[in-house]
Length: 258
Length: 353
Image (tube, rainbow over all chains, first blue to last red):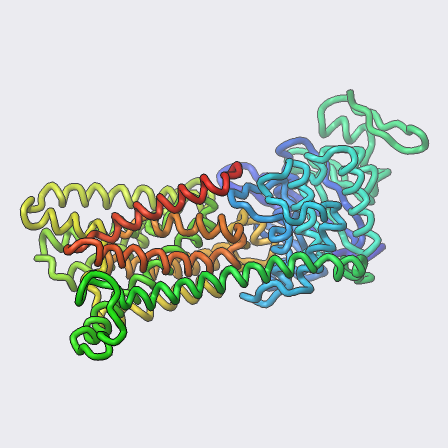
C-alpha cells in the first residue's frame, strides 16, 4: 500500500446549514502518485469535493489531511505550491495575453509582492509547451475558443508545478485531438510523481488515465477503489440511472450507454 | 516519491523561448520611460504657464527677477500642480484597482458610496453649517468614509451572491441613498447663495489648494498609492474568481479588503479636497490597458503616469483658458471622453466577451 497523500476523514459538508448536507460521510483517501477520477451525475457534489480538497471550503465535520497534516494548518503560499486547481471555466473581462495569464500560476512560488522573474517566464513557457498552446502565447485571452481557454487554465496549473493537481472536468470543451493531448499531459505528470484528482463526465477519459475511481451520487459514495473493481456496469448504471454496459473492444474496456 | 518538476522535464526549450517576451518587457519599459518623461515636461511647463504677467508662459528671466512671480509659482501654482498630479495618479490607480477587483470595467473609484457620500457631506455643510472651505472639506471626507463604511457593513449583511456582487449592490444602494439626500439638500438650499456653491463643488476644482492642505493629506494619499503600486502584479491574481485566487496561494478576502482601503483612502481624501473630478478614474485605466495590455504590472504604473499628466493638463486649461476658473470636472470629463473615443476609433475595438 502506497503512502496516502490526501485523506478525507468522515466529511460532512453543505452550503446551507438549514438544508441537508451536499456531501455526507465522505471517507476516502488518495494514494500518492495515483490518478483518481470522480464520476457522478450533475449536481452530485464533484466540484464541491475538489473545493474541499483545495481547502477553499471547510467541512462542517471531519478532517481533510494533506500528507498527514490538516489542510488548514498549511500557510496559504505553501498550499499554493502543493496543489493547483483547473476550474471548469473562468470569466475574465480584460484582455490578458495567454502568457501573462499563465504566469499567474507562478504566484505561490514568489515572495509576497515580488514580480515574476526570468525563471518564472521559463516555467510558464514550459507549461504552454506541455499544454500544446505555445503558439498562442501572445494571443489575447478574449480571442480564444472555449477549448483553447481550457488549455490555458491547464497551462496555468502546470506553471504552478504542483504535487497535487485538481482538475474539474478538464476535457469538457476539448476536441478529440486536444483530449488525447490532455490525456498525454496527465500521464506525463503521473510519471513525474504528481498525484491527480479529477472530475469527469467522460468514462473513456477516465478509463485512459485513472488508477482509482470514486463514484458519487447525491453526495454519497457509491463506490471507491481501483478502476477495474469500481468502474463496473452495475455502478455506472446506478449513478446515472440508465443502463450502461462495460464491454471489451480491441482488448480495452469501453463504456457503452446509447 | 520522486520530485521531478515540470521545468526540469522540458528545460532545453525554455531558454530559447524567453527571448521575445524579454523584448516585449523592454518595450514596455521604454514606453513607460517616455510617459514619465512626458509627465515631467508637462509638470515643469505647467509651473510656467498661467495668466501672470500675461496669458501664456512666463519667461525665465522674468521669473528670476520678479519676486511676485516667484511667490505665485511657489505658493499657488506648485501646490496646485502637486495636488493635480496626486489626484490624477490616485483616481486612475484606484479606478484600475477597482475595475480589476470587481471584475468590471465600468466601475470607478467613488462607486462604493464614496463620491456620493462626499457630495452629500459637502452640500450638508454648505446648507446647514455655513460652508467655510475647511469645514466643507472635513465633512466631505467624513461622509466619504461613512459611505464606504456603510457599503461594507451592508455588503456583510446581504444574504446572497459572492463577495464582489454583494459589495457592488451595497455600493449602489448607499450611493443612491446619499444622492437622494443630496437632491433634498439642493432642493432646500438658498437658490441664490447656497445652490451655486453646491453646484461648483460638485463640478470640482483645485482653486482652494494650499501647502498646508497638501501636507495634511499627503500621508494618506502616498500610503494608498504605495500599497497599490507594490501590489501591481498581485492585483491580477486578486481579480480572478475567488477559488482560483485561493488556489494560487492568495488570501482573497483579506488582500482585497486591504487594496480597497488603499484605493479608497486617497480617493476620498482627494474628492473631499477637490470636489467631484469625474471620469479620470473610469477612463484613464481603460486607456492604460489599451496601451499596455491588461496585466496590471505594466498597466497600473502607466495609469498613474497618464492620469497625473492628464489631470495636470486639464487643470492648466481650467486656470488659464478664461479669466475666471473653469470647473475641473467639466474638462476632465470632456477631454477624457474625447481621448477615449479617439483611441477606440483609431485602434479598433476588439470584442469584450
